[in-house]
Length: 592
Ligand code: F6R
Image 1 (spheres, helix red, strand yellow):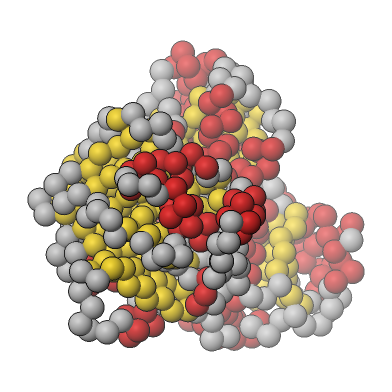
Image 2 (cartoon, rainbow, N blue to C red):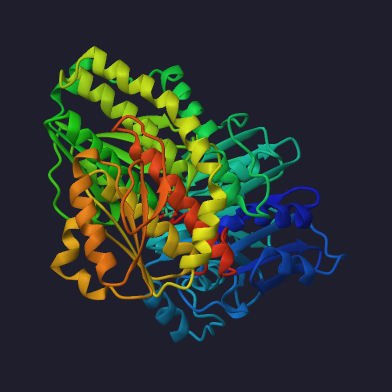
């Protein structure tokens, strides 16, 4: 969702390009860089990947101050004119921006009425022109005045020709600040900085940061100093680059990551909530977006088998604007791979405001989510770089299962023996998943058979339905085949009309209590000409079976999604898609 970077230090051009390559997962519509040298600020920008940008920069370009951007388009089409950075008209300022300037239309109108010409359709360019308009004789004053005029979410880095500082403005979009002995850095992602700096700080909202090569100072928008704590960066994991098929690599890591998720859960203290607090809980929310929401959906289906209180999965963007009840008896888990998803963070703010307890479930430590929640649990999936989330989903489910098992135990809903049984049963998962992975040739063959389907429907009942949702999301986002998920029993209420030759139905049938009903649903769609693929430990007539091992009933969601992740991968490969960077998407969605 746009990556921004800025640095003061040696080799600013080469290092900014390196950083942009690392940040490419945040957007890959275009990339650009601004470099300050003795003659002013030079801009280079290209459509597409950072590789294209590298080719567009002459080798002699050198500077010790640079800013850079990778774009995921929100305002204005994908073209060079809309690529960041943007100059002010007099070229004394250049900016990069991540977020959305919500009042850009009125600002644009004001600027246009005093003769400012805009070169792009973006909201971001407004900031560069405001900086020029607000400049009298102090860049800091101009940055502060500009910050006060902006509404929305923004992390902005500013280069200028008047002084040697690098400036940043931050509200509601991620901005990490790093320092080392010889320079200072602004960036969207802490993991990108770890190769250069020993100390980082997460900039709070509504601050302006001013960096020189020795230090960084922070101010609120009135210009009062703000104290911000730096911490050692050794916890941050470096992103190693983004070439090759990360998605397959990340699927193959699932068995090991599940082991680590379980170990890490206990090493880090388990649920870590006092029994008294848990006793009081009367309502649990599981909130996230996309794949993270699907893991909440699955975890809720499992928790309903243990707990008698309300366990409600909600899509974060819906939670923000709807009236879900929240009070001091509410425990809300916020699930996010990146820890930066704007919708999820807004939902945290809402629960906090209304007195609920907020609990982050994420694999990105030091992310914005970790700073806004009362409690944080790492899922130990490590960095995930393919846009389509895979291993994070499995680790979210392991962690949520452990958390909800502990909540159930502390609330007296399950006894110690049941709790131990659930915890121990997780140990068989890595071997069961290895078995599925070793069948990948069969899945690849099936992918060839269904790749030209006119549509693919995923169906399941009870705890298999969330798996259907996740399988469908995976397939559509990387293959671009139209796909939908349905509770199997719901088909006959309308969707059955779409069944015909050329349509594929993927049936997830792991709930042993639903086998007869699933057999019926399968028969209904097969009779109408659909090709049926079935993921199950049981066998069904008229289907191509992707067999999975038998495991504890609480664990099927973690296991049965793996053949679906592989199926999506192989279908997309066979269609020639860029599986790691699907069209129109970005890994981290930091705008609402
Ligand atoms: C799908 C996918 C997205 C994310 C969603 C939330 O494969 O990756 O649907 O799950 O954008 O992202 P996080 O988990 O970073 O909050």
